[in-house]
Length: 546
Ligand code: ADP
Image 1 (cartoon, protein in one colour):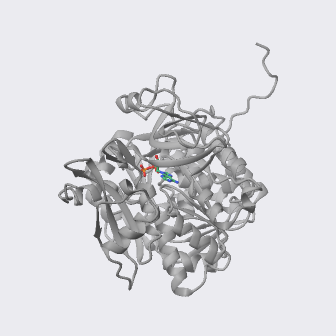
Image 2 (tube, rainbow, N blue to C red):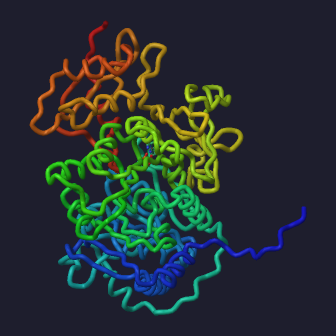
Image 3 (tube, rainbow, N blue to C red):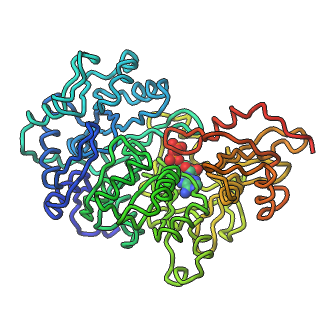
């Protein structure tokens, strides 16, 4: 082999914040803080604080490879932790505070976290759980002295701003191997126990470049951008790293993620782009309808994490002129896999056809390979019709679960591809169409019914605010679909009206056998509709034997 003669400089997360501080020095990071104020600091100021924090961590004895946990909202302080912890070779372990307490206990102990940085919101929760957080030696509240919790709910609780003030102002970042671990994130366990994805500096930087390439200026602007997707959910889909390269003003929403709060913050800070799961966009849409307008500058939304209903995306586009980009990914993929990437020709198609295309999960970004396979693992053609389990491969895809050999064995095929647990088709021109999670498919007789397809139609029915389809046992067909509906405020659609609407758009065998009405749908820790909880709630629901 003739080796290339180029410098072997490592791809490191610390280089991102250094770059932002130099090239985007005056661009702001704006936070709606837990304390209730709006806080502003520039990227240059952010780096200065990151350095002080890194030095403070070193003084507290943090060693390379240590897992340092966070339980925090999207704020400038959480952003600083991302860079300071990884900068010194430790691992930033973001814990999802919406997990069940026993799941949090499990992951803290599994990860062997030694420190926990927490927003004051979570002090009561951690106070209850701390006796089970065995490896954690140091707790730090993400606030200033004036807002520290009264009394001493957690013994020895340190104050973040005091730590920073004591940290030295200069650092020479260690020249780490780029394959060093930098971040750890557990899946929310939507379909099982939490499993850890351990990212490396290299994978995070490559993921950043891959997303930028796929964005091609369409959804990764230099204009203000707001991550509704939490920094404890798969690195906020990589956005904290991306903005260091583009210098986009970064607007952090803190703890308030309801439609009203998001609308006001987006309006005030002239937010151009928002990233989040469909549930969030339904909430914002409600607020937009009430006010009869959109947040003034909002122009792009990246939606992902679960399928967005076609009706929701069409309303955003047609009524408000907001361009929706639809993405699919997984915690295990850093997390982005595919995003809407339309050709210039596709952009000139009639509106309804464009919406059909945008309902698809997108085209793979560079750096992600995809294949669909049958039950025996044979590859299926990318013909837009063959359905199979989706497998992926790439430099920002996990090669195993952290400290979990059994889960690793179950997730990879003999060629090292990662099984997503999703069933999909892929069109000849590379569009991914997600049929369903394997576990959510309704197996009716010999046919599979996609819950996503049925929900899409049901949500388009007048008077329906939200809908979910689950499988319930059936005496003749094994499983049949049950439609769970939330009515729109003031509307009262009947079961018959909804079923007639669905029957007009789907094949007879896909039409749900029954409709039940609920006030709201249960959500998972990552804000998606929890099919698992719905299945439990309606386990006793009896369908007629027809
Ligand atoms: P969790 O299981 O904790 O919710 P992830 O966010 O990693 O964690 O979930 C990934 C899964 O979410 C995917 O395997 C897929 O089933 C689902 N998903 C992600 N994006 C989409 C999308 N655009 N459309 C449909 N499903 C999606």
